[in-house]
Image 1 (spheres, rainbow, N blue to C red):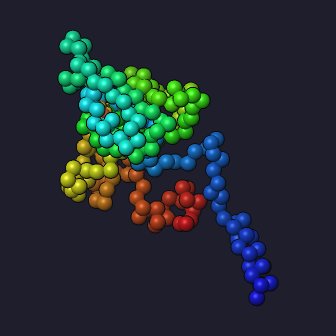
Image 2 (cartoon, protein in one colour):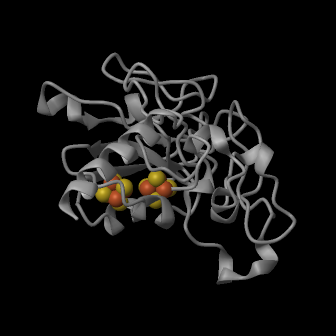
Length: 227
Ligand code: SF4
Ligand code: SF4
């Protein structure tokens, strides 16, 4: 009957009053981000401070949005910038074009370009939207440079390493839990990525499996309910 349906609606609303709130006061408060989220890029350095980029331009070639511009140059013999013959002399990403697909990260042979978890940034001019090496290269502590128009929070520089890659060599399960990337300035060698096996270290990596999510083991993230 239509009348009963009307009161049935109230019943549902009253039931929801007792449910835990899931609303977050964004941007005052940010919810934890997934480990693989694609945010603003960083250009990484080795633990000794040398730049990982060798100026090969593979990232620029693979970018579907045509937003990367790279020019390599020969390393000065007396003061090499990277361990290779060449280094990234010019490196630019145009964020008016970038779709954060991470194809550049997949293509990079030295894990030089990866993405952070920070995506809260905007610009008032086209020039600001083009990040150059001065903005992208991590600082002398190995941390991403925090620009005035960016909203960085704790942990958004976590797992920027080859973590961001979708693939593993040969796709073999034998590589699960194995570190497949070099160390980084300021972070050392980051923990291996989790997988399906018991070699995963979720505490170190912050990884949360779908299985766990559905098993409702993380009530703080989902308001105590599987939705
Ligand atoms: S994330 Fe995708 S669109 Fe953005 S720079 Fe990399 S390849 Fe290009
Ligand atoms: S970021 Fe990687 S792919 Fe791009 S030019 Fe440098 S080394 Fe080559």
